[in-house]
Length: 287
Image (cartoon, rainbow, N blue to C red):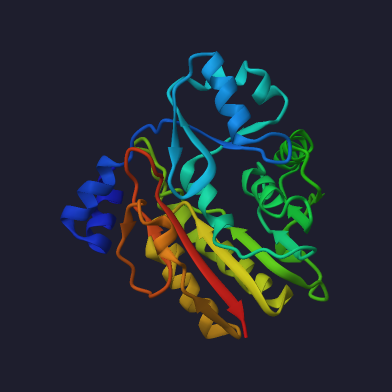
């Protein structure tokens, strides 16, 4: 991981880079309760019956940290029936940054496998008009499967979001963009060639998102990268190109989450540790 280590030292300094690298480790199993089909009290009771220990999560009442293996959970009825969803803690955070209202039109631009899409359906109690997009056919089938299993009301499209008609308009857009994965890497195989390729695609998706967002609409951009080229520098590119402004994320809601310093105000970069993957989140409004 020498090349990535050098990059992290360049961006964050030696001490923080070491903390980040120490955070690249296996995480405990975490689940999100699917409130479209169940509730947390029932799930806790079910887990108690199987002697599975769990812990609450401060920032999200419907999330749990489990002390068991994924294989154990996949064999339980609550998993098979779609009452819970296996999801990392960091990936649960972006949808929580939105302030949803009934009957809004919401787009998930890069949706597979569907964790955040289904979370949005839960947070809106299936009262929003959600469209989820995935260009890869196999991943799109997985997205459809998860949406159906979770009971989420979502229109799924197998297409590239960059090709969407500019006459479309959405109140809110989630762009959890394809990235290098620099915040989640767990081995020595980091591909720097993927960074440049990712940046090109990320910027094209950001421009498209700005074009199809309603005036006053909200865009959330996130990646599982902690490199500024894929994050703050992309947001600066968007601000220079389109009529957008950054909305400050309310970090007080996420006060227990480890945060990395940023070169931009209002955004949030989660530091990898024993519980959280590295993640970047920015909230923007179309002027």
